[in-house]
Length: 192
Image (cartoon, rainbow, N blue to C red; front, side):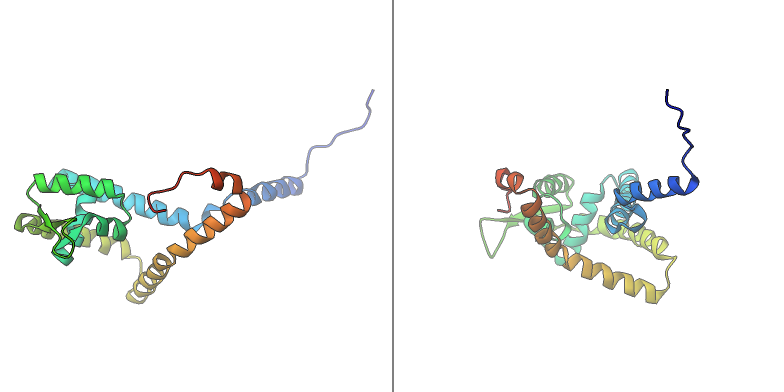
């Protein structure tokens, strides 16, 4: 018979165990991609709900309208590259926008193999209506920052955006070292 007395773990032991467990997980309070994702998802979902309810278009259409208002015309490939939307999603969005009379399509003057979307007066009018809502949402979102903080934030976001290719390179390098067999078996992407 075992007569050894067992004692419950001390508070200090529990804290050490909790610290060890925390070290094996992502600290969401310090994980920048989580905050960026949460903010982007919540801003997009909220905007899309309002735009659908009032203007009968979603966030994808708004994103395309913004780029079209700046350039007047744009290709699906350029929208995909700038916004990060899948090219198929952009093409479907353009088709819906064309059906609503927001854009028309024509052949690209520089390369006749490509079609480009051209903003119509109806599309410009819709852009201008939604812009007021979008700018008010941005104003409210940034209202907790002063002008200098907004400038710093935008500068930091630009730098992070420009650094995304380095993130992909670092990810590929890490995967090659730690998961080389899986990398060797992967299917080539459309970008390869």
